[in-house]
Image (tube, rainbow over all chains, first blue to last red; front, side):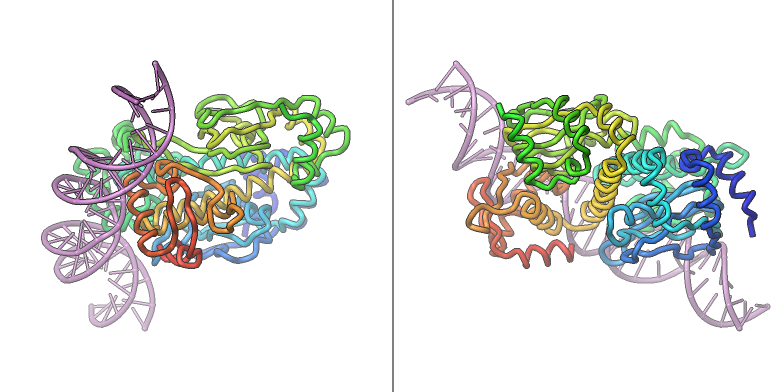
Length: 233
Length: 233
DNA sequence: TTGATTTTGTGTTTTATAACACAAATGTAT
DNA sequence: ATACATTTGTGTTATAAAACACAAAATCAA
């Protein structure tokens, strides 16, 4: 179990704009009402249609926000890393969750009642601006994603996803191995394609010397090449 | 040219949450710094990559927010009707516009410097909450749209679009004719398909007695049927 | 009014990607 | 270690939708 001090260290080191927006007394309120939750690999943190009540802060691990669609198809919408916040959108929209969140790997979350957060927002404009900024960036990203997913071809979409993973989770010490290990299915769900096509396209990237693959370990060896494929479609 | 009083009437009659969030002195600041702009049919209001500086309020007419993608393809992202606001997302995100806005028909806009809006936000939490709420709803909608556009088949996507148009702009006095007259191309760009496919699918809807078409006039005669097609995919 | 341009409509061909089917490899539980 | 489930990999087939090509109609301009 992490200690409160660990939380403060993580959050402040990560220059969390949210935490920095708070006044000392507000920070106290948050830490006093803050709960840790541990999630196992693949465990669902919240699910579509549930009522949003908490703000989640990912402290350790990696999680995916996804939406199930037609048939058994799933679209991964966003990825989160420490220290990022989620769960607030549906609360602010006054509607049930439209997507679900699950842990990619064992994860530790900080949980704070949204009611409390909203109260603080009402007295702290910096915090309000934090959420306005976050929401605005997410909305821009979502609009851009629509183009990526609908207009790019399979290779473009997969290349895009690999670059997104690199961007989001970075590389291992070798500077080439993606620091996240996804199943082919997750990769497919991120890229709007079937699992077989994710496998096949990944293979073709290996053939084209863009990446190296060893099980779930992916090494990016020609980022520029991937970028070109992603851009062109 | 519309008079100031007309503005106040329109805005307050439409129970605009934004306007209602303002204190009297703030309302004065807004009306004092408010400018009308008239746009012709198909005229661009702002374009991708430009720097956002204003909040736009659609007072009269209809506009589309769209994003150009690969090749000549365009995706219509959102539709606006009076009295709705746009143009603020990119400003809040501190980034250039990622989409463009153009008038479907002759439109009147209210234009307010975002700098001013931001100043007011910093002193008025109700206004901050207005934007948090708007952004949250838009983000939920954008996430849902991703599923619609990527996972539904052509018929489902077009049905969805027709229902969206009905929802957004309503019907003429006959209660069946859509109160918006789009080109087949716009319809296609709304539904992520080619123009020929929009034409063909529209035809097939006529054959299936779901709609009636006369030029750009579309009558919805089996909304339930469309809803079923849209849901199934 | 006439000619030009844009929009709409339709048939045909091509292609990207899903769907299906199954084998091999890997992981997991007993 | 053994059986069982899941994930990965590969070939084949089916199909939805784009691409192309062109005619007819409608709209616009001079």
